[in-house]
Length: 239
Image (cartoon, rainbow, N blue to C red; front, side, top):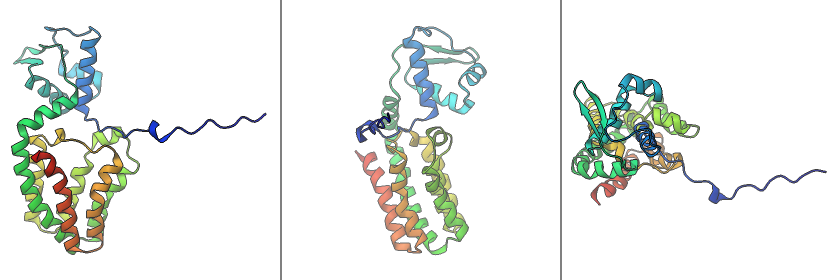
């Protein structure tokens, strides 16, 4: 006797995939070790090399996690003496983002304003000047989002790739260098701690109008789309 197929899960059973940074995963694992009693106040962490092998992460990612913990007084780093746990309460990564964003907000806003001015211009120039290859480079990060796994997303930076491709498509090397410098400064100042897109579709939808306007060869529409993109996050920074 044939059995009927199980009912399909309701739409409520699916939730957006949360964007997780690799350093946040390390912080969450340290919190779990403390919670399980495997790590206590005063304990010394294994060496960087041992932790890299255990967690299979790069040294920069490992140091980013410890830097966040050190800024909150949770971990103490002694020159030549290793790292030690100094507090048992380890905030959730979302709390770390809020704390870092609060201290870096003004700097981020200044860089964002400079980026907006430069990248709106770059979008207009890209719409007028982009070659087929350059247009393909702008669209590639958006296509990658359609099949990208969370792990692949954490390893790369599709947002950075998209904005870099637009800058190059402007065919103004001076403007391109200005934008690349600003992107670097923005990352250093705490861009990673800004509220992330809720899912891949949200990130793609935020950039798609820019690509469409550039692909259509419409400089004004491209400038408007880029300006709208910057406004959404500027509103977050100004709150």
